[in-house]
Image (cartoon, rainbow, N blue to C red; front, side, top):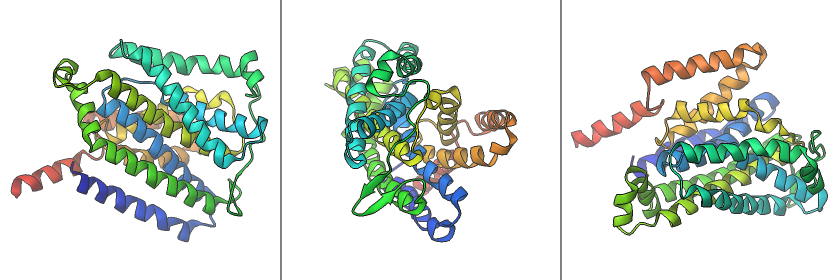
Length: 321
């Protein structure tokens, strides 16, 4: 999809999102759904960039999200750093951690990268609950219960002030989405695709796999950590339940519904997944069953995600011209 059409779809989507609080600003339930759509849309987009475009089977996206959340919470609670700064610092910390995770993955491929990154995900729980985690302020099994809200220019942004928090998240989402789009449509994005299709061919063209793989790990983990930190100050508390398989599965469903490597399909996938997940919450144990059935139907009939008909439409229009 061309840059113009991609920006047109995203622009239309975010224009609609931007005016919804004018109608639903007093309805906490809907505002919470809208905020979580914005947060998960960016997190899922980062995963789509690293997996769908760069072809790196990283399963550490939830881990980076949680690292960002805990980093900002610890910095603001234990070190009294204002949340405005702790969120940025958390993004940088997560980005550096992403680069460290990416280094051993450079010598691996396919399922082995998935195993390494998923191992990072699995080791976070015992680390945060153990003595080392408690030493740095993770709160152990109890978690962190008193995360301060974001205060900036005399305004408070938290779950008690949903409309201001929505527009703060909306502003950051727009910035990060533009960065991801520009990366996808730049020389970097082309290099990612070439490396994905044939690393040997890419190397023969002078494209450094070392450079671009580390770059995509660093960028996606930084943005993911940033929004994990934002989430921490939104809910005001954290626990290792964030690392449950439910969260990982929900993020994976967003990718499948949107279409892996079919950006901005994953943004639409985030809207559908978050909304359905919230609406099905009263059904309890039947919720994952219904979500699983939806994924099976989509895989059978829309293998490239819900955005695939739109891709085919644009392709047919190009042929007509």
